Length: 113
Image 1: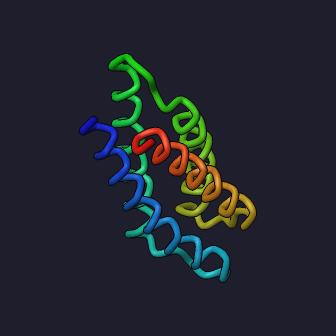
Image 2: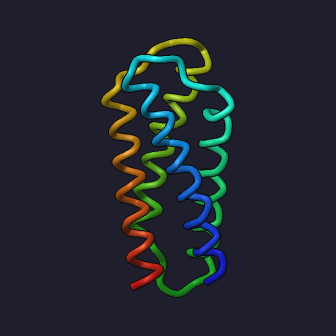
């Protein structure tokens, strides 16, 4: 169970940074690149830990993994657009966040339920 709690911790940190980044996106301001380069790796570590946990056998949080992978795809697209200085739709940033929040809720229900 330690892996799943570590995963939750990494996702929680990524979520805090993500909310901070979203505030910049919604205001049309340039995102702080140090936060951009920290948010994604934290979430990726959380996802890798979650996948490792799922591969160990037993019940797994499949819904969370699917939602986090979808959020990661959108996040990767936004990352590359952002570092190249190209804008991306605000609805994509909101959708990315909503997918991740849904995945996090499913993960919490799985781990604590």
